Image (tube, rainbow, N blue to C red; front, top):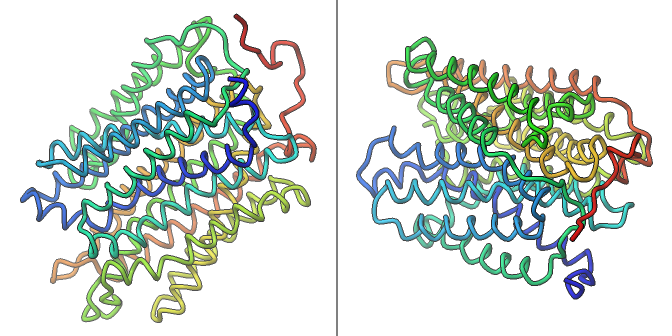
Length: 480
């Protein structure tokens, strides 16, 4: 691997950015074309939603697991594995003759969610200390940028080359990027010794699937239905068993002591709240914009037009990935998180009172995008600064996973609010949407308040690995 070690870190960064950006795009590109897929395969709405649900469930389960495997067996190796799954899943979905096979392809693609924690771990281990915070923040911002951009480009791509193009394009990009990662990205010398336990992995997968399945189906089945209540209870029981087993493992899958660190649990709380608001906004704002003008509030926008109106959100998130690190060095990452939460809240609450003209939608979306971008760009460096290097993958993976959990909760709650206000035409009323957007703005404000709980980190530790307090927290090098 000596040749790989001489790879310029800028090239490694480019490969990591492509990998994370591809994963983020694939999260949302299918959302605007679900009705098209439903028609193509002559299936039901409840079935076609599994094209998205299966992907989120798979990513939620495998993101922290792949991150932990990277800490144990090598981040380079697991980066390539994750990207192979991204590519393979896209290929299966592109060729799928039935809706069932397409859903299976999306499950495979979800395994590729491991690219996010692996990317953070590689940045932590390989990049110059002064570049760690900026690189981690930029890669993190790609999640928000990619999610928004996926909604924007989905319509034009589907109109131009068909909905299968939404899978062929990522297949081509991730295949090339996987080969580049295999050839150029160096293997990390920092690992967690010992085997990765199977029982905690099974228990964690169990409670995540039970929880997210119950939440995603709650608007359809009913929040008080026996199915939803049963799944939530099952999730709680399995989660308690998982925590107990982790406490008794010599080398746990997820170190519960790490999860109790103030710098970790506060960042996870913020990720949960911002994920709640971001996913729900991107999921329902296009519907709001595509509502017929005859309702008195909709724009009657096409899929592509609604995407263009959301574009400022994605662009602002991308800009944040560039400027967040300098701002964090000047004012502290904690302050950037709090400011981001306030801006996100202002943008979403602004949507409640400013939604009659296109320029108003563009303005409030841009403000919200800066808020979300600042938060996500700052959380990754904070997580890396809070944990020892050999736990970077596991800690980053759980943070990304908790953000997805927040997104599932937010989407389910938003769906319940919107659908509970339905006009005689069968379409949601303006009140339903505005109540929901107001709730999301309030959630971003709560995220800002939660950001105040984040411990203040010395400026040097924001840009570099944390100063370890003991030999136990020191880096663990790979030994023969």
